[in-house]
Image (cartoon, rainbow, N blue to C red; front, side, top):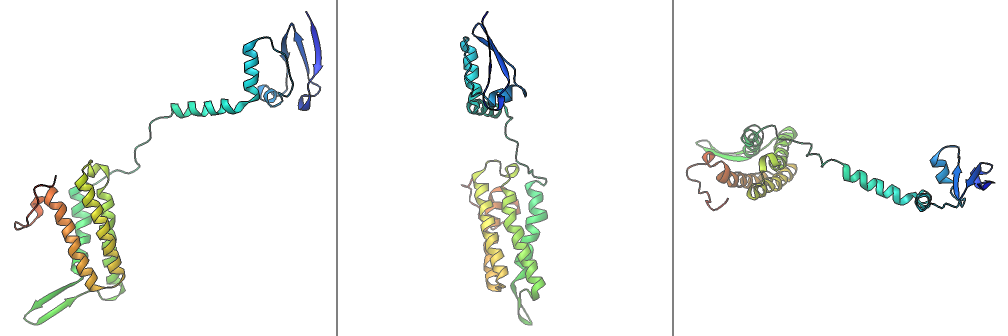
Length: 217
């Protein structure tokens, strides 16, 4: 057998290797990682598989990329959304949306009786803040209605829910402007959005005179 001894360059300087009949045996402090990092030494290998392995060790980039892809392929399915409905739609209406709407509707109005005409509107910062808070509840309620547990893929439901968000945003703006006329006008539009939704999903809550559109799915 032919034996050769030699020394590697760089950080491996002084570390011996021995070649026996074209194969090589190398001992490197630190294991395979240290060997890979110092593969500027050309070592003849007769075995094709061994040469391919050496080339791969010299260029770890593709190995890392393939490893990442393999790990991604093994990951579980995406987790479900972190939110879930607690109240059903009817409970949400009764406990959240309706009380807020009543506050907004009652904030501005006109009463005419035997004693004359009485105008109702918020007085002072605290009363206006209550109206604004109610408007925020209406706007955010549209988002709550869009939860899949409630929407259940119904396009019309989603459309009406987005309409609640938009009219709620306008209700907030009117309250912030401390504009009684704007609050009164937007309050009427809030009522139309509510009844437009109830006509399809809660017709029993409407007055008998309300003409619901039977064509809406």
